Image 1: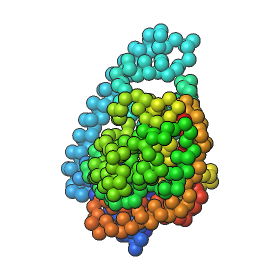
Image 2 (image 1 turned 135 degrees about the vertical axis):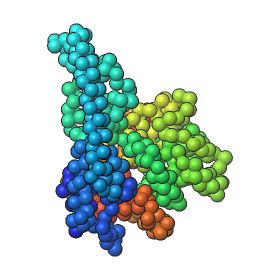
Image 3 (image 1 turned 180 degrees about the horizontal axis):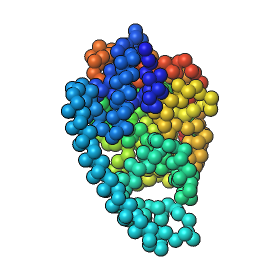
Length: 431
């Protein structure tokens, strides 16, 4: 029998790819162990080999599933003939693009050998070749995820400053894009939010950690105006309401989270100082310089830290503060299984020092940072495990729910078996 990791490595795939194949019914494991670990048989291995062969031929997953499940040589032949037609059309399109780019390179302002290729000239070339802004973003995303080091080398070749390279790579790797893709796949995001309802906090943290970070802020008024993007159910919101006499505007994309937050605010007696907005953290409509303090615990990664810090800065008053927590590496010697898990889960994760340097390049002054206590992780994971146990009977046979539950349990297991590899860092910045 093969474990999911061993089978993925054998075929040059990622673990998340096999989880996705399971979710869409393309390749199910033959067995599950008592701990819900997947085990694959030799027959599963052979089926995956055929899937990979068909994928190399460019077939869509739905077509591969039909071929494998329905069988029949005529079905295979018809699908391959359709693919050949598509390839002919794609090659004709590529030849047309080739002729177009060759013509563009004939223009002196684009092809002068005495000039080094830079970002402006490269962008101009792509635009003239018919690339939209979205096409360019997708190109960077594919490059970053397939060959991150080569992508970085390419960006440096264009003489792009380090801070912009970090922003481009964060955009390309940002889970925000992954969430959007999953959202389009059907029920994934609906199930994701449902599974995480009822948690005390949506990430590691505590009232003591929130207070420690707030006390590091300088120059705030007695009643600060606070913006909290990605507030979840309001764990940090309630702490801020206790610590300060300020007003808090909390935003999230999931209305049930905001409803729970307001219920907590009413129970605490602070609903007059707390309001909610159903808004994406990357698409806010507040006037510039509206807030004394922006606070985001554990959610900036969704947008990409550099992109979030750059975008949110416009909403800060001059001299205002921004506090965020982010998952960071604590060592360069993490085991391969930990590195591989977070390479998929948070490919842009870096060290606290890297975060601080990136913030300073964006014009912030660092007021300090600290690593959140290990006790916060245990309390958070205990809460998560209890929630997974509650919902597992309902979502045991749901492909999306099963994938989320399995990934969550693996994350917890890796953290407990390999302590000290990574942690949440609370950063305190001043605009």
